Image (cartoon, rainbow, N blue to C red; front, side, top):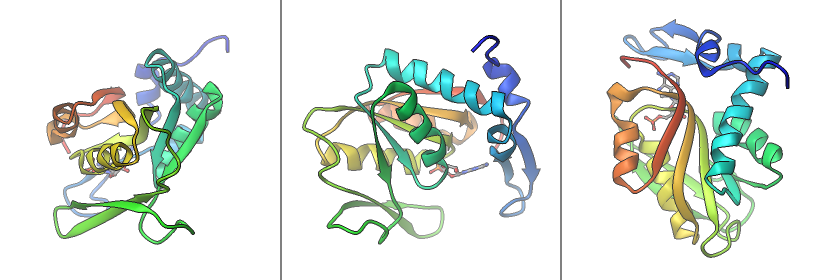
Length: 182
Ligand code: AMP
């Protein structure tokens, strides 16, 4: 690729939608980024370079937007992709982790055979907010035997503390861009 868009330029492709899905939430919409061919390619390029330097042997992405970036990064690196799914989607016996939401709980599941013992799995998702999803994903991958030392995001909302929480769980966190506020 000749001129790869910088992370700063990529930030200009994110659409901010106020009060979605609830009043007070600034929704950071990646559909405008992935709809731009150079934006999509550059996002994947930057994430893949970090994952390569981290020695990724597999990429794990969370349903649903983590599939978009995670699968593309896995292809860019020529390694496998692990879908971390919402409950009841996989056609096999799964392992799962329940985690707290602001109201209630949620659950993530994966194929326990998707990882070899000690395999270096890098997590990729579109955005980290409170970090609940990513922390549960790290826990789940570790249950399956993975080494989880790195998680990559297109967007970090640092004011929500998710990246710090994930670092507290022993995972290095990198994001292509940050937005202040929530
Ligand atoms: P969390 O578990 O709080 O880190 O939330 C992570 C997931 O929620 C991400 O995968 C995002 O897809 C979604 N999400 C949370 N907050 C936002 C936001 N302000 N804009 C867009 N997506 C969000």
